[in-house]
Image 1 (cartoon, protein in one colour):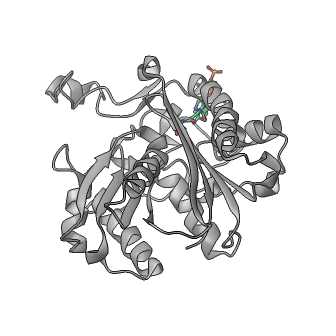
Image 2 (cartoon, protein in one colour):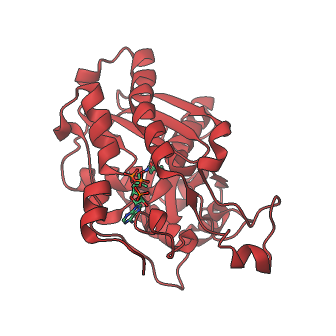
Length: 303
Ligand code: UT7
């Protein structure tokens, strides 16, 4: 399709495979599968949910929100629902919002989903981006509790001056869809990869520091790091700078590529399923991406 090679993709990105969902599937379909599993694992019913947050840059449609579509499909009648658009940091933003709602005291259970169908906004004639992105979803249920486990601290930041480094130009109110926007491929992801790379390798250590300091936790006490899976070289560079053991980094980019807001919850879910992450362990999750946005969460895993 484009002038590239398996060797270039693997050595420059670490990606070997990606998942692309079938044409009749949309983001809410992937979100539903992830949500059902998370609700089952949490041992609750959909009707127990007070709030549903879906982090995505590929909603089923502009409105209503994908969270509302998911609420109906789950039958979560009493849940409020809205989407969060924070690029690849979306899941961390949603987790921080859920944490604040739980602290408010009115909400007991919140479903946080990261779901994307990036294949729908990928230009398969652009080799700079088409080898990177895939489809997927992941979800967690967070609940109010009094034990030692849970979200210990969160950190969110944004720098909107980086808007044009990673964006989708058309289809919004600035540039509504027209024959011209379609002809000019303006409904697809545009990215200045090396600029975003530079931002990412600085963002990760900053996000880790910002989330550990307020909790009084040393970087050496952290059991696992779940970083947004954008490029294996970003992770390697950041890990080296922070002088943390590579074995503490959860990596699955090889099988999924970059799935934006879905990457962190999917990596988390796999590591829990595989028995890598245990209850009581300390995790730091870090997201970075379009906006530009970045954010992190320090979590003690478990109920
Ligand atoms: O998830 C949200 C955040 N996103 C990211 O964090 C993505 C961050 N960026 C990246 O991961 C990397 O910048 C990329 C993987 C996108 C690109 O890797 P790079 O090492 O930064 O390459 P580059 O953009 O500097 O391009 C180097 C060369 C160029 O050729 P010339 O101009 O040196 O002749 C590109 O045209 O590699 C070329 N190139 C390719 N060659 C073969 C770019 N894409 C490809 C390709 N196959 N698919």
